[in-house]
Image (tube, rainbow over all chains, first blue to last red; front, side):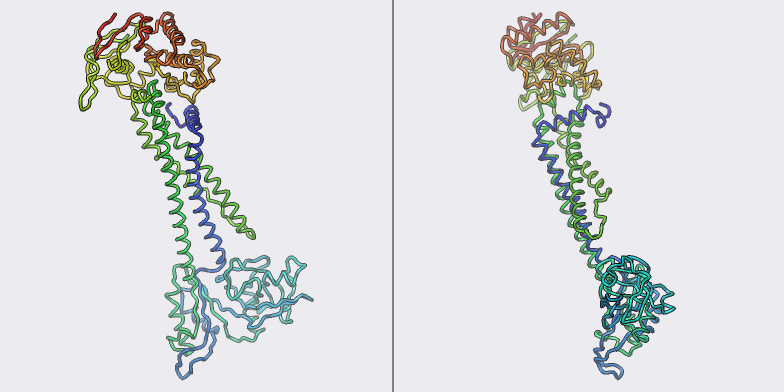
Length: 416
Length: 222
């Protein structure tokens, strides 16, 4: 009896007492099972939801924004209102120089009309984008094969193209990997250097899947753009809040283009980080709610254990008396009651964890059929829940155990 | 074996109840005695004190030369386990354990290994002629068989005395006689000191000596 935890007889004893009233043991166990399963499911489910939702933004820099030119709304410096204007490469350069807070400033050139992408008799009309290598800082594409546009493409104005996955599939239906082949864009041949798609659902002006990207220098020549930029995107360095510097960025650009500093309609600015913050709050709320409900269910289960242990002690007063009479020490009785609670908690809790893991696994498989996700419950979470449960389950047995300990053998024997 | 000197016991309450009023008693090793008295005479209290199930207020109780007084719960449990074998009126077997496990239970609390426990328990069951009932649950046994299992349990730790509380109270006359025979045989063959509390004169008559208790005092020690 020195170490009751490792004494096989002790456990046989516990097994026998728990097996004695199978219905009650089962129902109590089910309470715990459900508590553990609910907690694990809710926490795991919240994680899964978070994961699935954040996948929409995968590849998209969360601390990024954009400026797009509009038409002026206030007459200023001799210009009438309603004037349209354009961003240009000088703006990009000014922003780069004046805002060390920005990690990258990326001009985007976009074709106004769809471009026909042709391979022999196959043709698809998609939009063309003039991209600089830093484009990946804003929106990381999923490279199916090949590479993205690099600095050499840019400086040498190479006629190379990164095809969107969907376009590649449409015009090269028989070629699994068209990298190295040629595609004609509006009749001009380009070498395909990569095939790309969107990592998440978020994108700049349409999905990567349906775009064709060429170096911005090449784009400006091919589409006769000179210095004109369709929009400017930028990424803040870590810790920089874009909303703090956006007004200064606007006024820098507005000054250059002769626009009234307070003109709201002259340009649209987009701050993605604000959207991300909102979403993060939703996620935290979701997790908190899951935790609250789960913990409540868990507590209900634990109280159930304490309750049932109390009933068991009451019911077995005489038996405990007999055991005391034939030599059981108070410690033996306490150990027995606590171990019973613990055994019940461990077995039912493990079943609950396994059940939750199974449900989460299936849910993960179904919800992320097209792309596998790591939705399995982390070992840490499972262990955490189990430990909490076993500790609480054992504690729940303490009050009944204390009561059992106080049973005097003689009282017990008299309660016939 | 048992020596009580001026033992007093009062149950506290609004009206304190003085149940044992200076009990002096001596039971020698190897005796088979009965304690008789009407209900409320204090015989159950006396049995509880003899069995170290209850404390007394004043006086002295020596069991096999050891002063049994103001013991802690753990010491009391240990003494009960090693020195005393209990036999109860209602058998008090644990009904979800089979006969063998019931008999082995006191050894479990001694920390005896499982194998040894079962060997010793089996020996006692054989002695009681119940070897073939070892795996039966108490519910599957007759009253007499249950009491024999209980006696086997009392004997398994090889105690100094057997304390039996109305051991035949729940049995018919024939099985009562059987059980009494067991006590007598045990006493004769192994010299087991045996104290039987009873209100049945037939039982008392079969013992070496009858100790009569009335109103908390011993009135005859025949």
